[in-house]
Image (cartoon, rainbow, N blue to C red; front, top):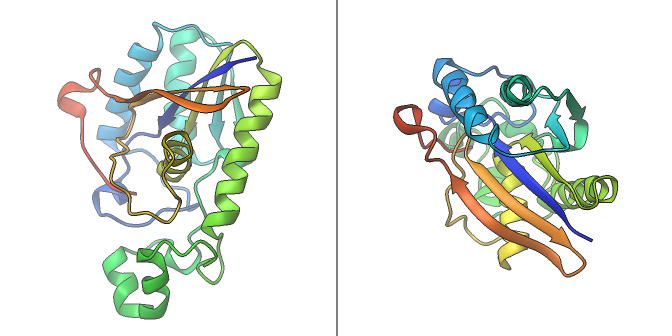
Length: 210
């Protein structure tokens, strides 16, 4: 049986603009992020969803509630939709990490699968969490379409899984804030249907990293 997922990265935050690594630090949407969420929700409102799920982090829940208001569906929160925990790199930029934690930075840019940022979550553990989350949601929503609001890291793992890219290969694809990304999970695996649909964003579109 098949479950379809429309997965959205949260709207922009000030830390996105500053290229500051958020991880699981709770940062709210900025003005642009709120405008992105409203524009995205208008597009998502043309689709039928059986449920809306989001990360516990504020930037994701704010974004999800924009969809909720359009569709009249309650938002259900799940801890396993949260971003990867970046440990000692949370709250700093990559450049600051290179200066203050050069050994850790080398693991970070190499996408070392087992490096846990000393106090955080390794990439291999995070990827397992993402996969288990999607499998669990699929079991509860067989034959349905559901909306998920999560984070760049969550989408990164799923894009790689669906397209056959390895976890430690350099990222060669964009993950825009508030774009619609459609996946299908069936007995044959995970399939990417639409990536980075952002035509609804127009003048509020920005391209920000993690």
